[in-house]
Structure formats: structure tokens, C-alpha cells
Image 1 (cartoon, rainbow, N blue to C red):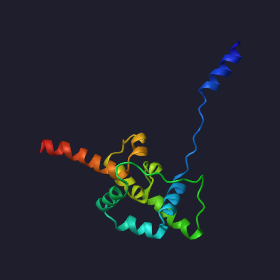
Image 2: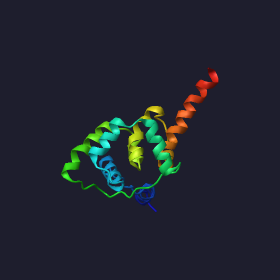
Image 3: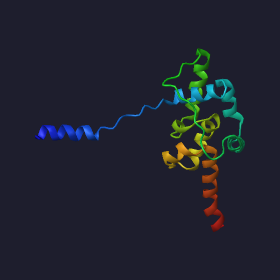
Image 4: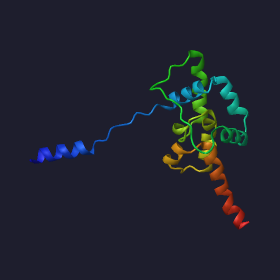
Length: 148
């Protein structure tokens, strides 16, 4: 086997298939559709609902494990829903949004990121954001309580 063949085989072995992940717009549109919400009502939730109520509601519905939402390859939304979805995305812009799987997780993505910006993606995929929020909030309070 020549140099050319060995290089070619090495390149073939190192290639890993790319997994397609829908963008944030598609994810949020699919979540709202799956849970029967429209953009305007979700924006009101975003403005008015405190984090503690969102956490309690999410834990009552989901528990610690994450529920899955079927995601399309791309979102087809009504033109009247496009502007509210864009507003939601601009207000919730956060690195944890790609793993959100429910309206509560969309709402909790920013507070969770503010609480701990270094949560590993594997944990975000597996556990609900409400469970993670409570876990990291307790973890953050624990050292303060022991020193105080």
C-alpha cells in the first residue's frame, strides 16, 4: 500500500457523520406547537412568570428526567407567529436553548445559564432544566451556608 492509499484510508476513518440539529427557531416553534401555545401567550409568560413558579410547574409535570419533543428539520410557522417567535429568541438567547424540550425549559434556560454557565451538554440533554436549576441553586447555597 502506497502513501496515497494510507492517507486516503486514514481520512476515511477520521470522518464522522455530521448530526443535523435544528436551529433555535425551529426548536422553539416545535415546542410551542407541541404544547399548544402561541407566541403572544408565551411572551406574556416570559414577562410575568417568576422563576420559582416555572420550576415548580416543570417539576410537577416532568420530574427530573427530560421529556422529548419531536423536532422537524425546519419550522413552518404562520406569518402572524413569526414576529413573536423572533422576539422570544432575541429575549431568551442563551447557550442552553438548543437542549430545551418544553416551554418551561425555554423560560428557564437564561436563569439556569446565569446560575451556572458551565453545565455539560450531556447533563442538559438528560435532565430537565427545572431539576438542574434546583440542583445548582442548592449547590450554590451550600457553601454559603457552611461558611456563614
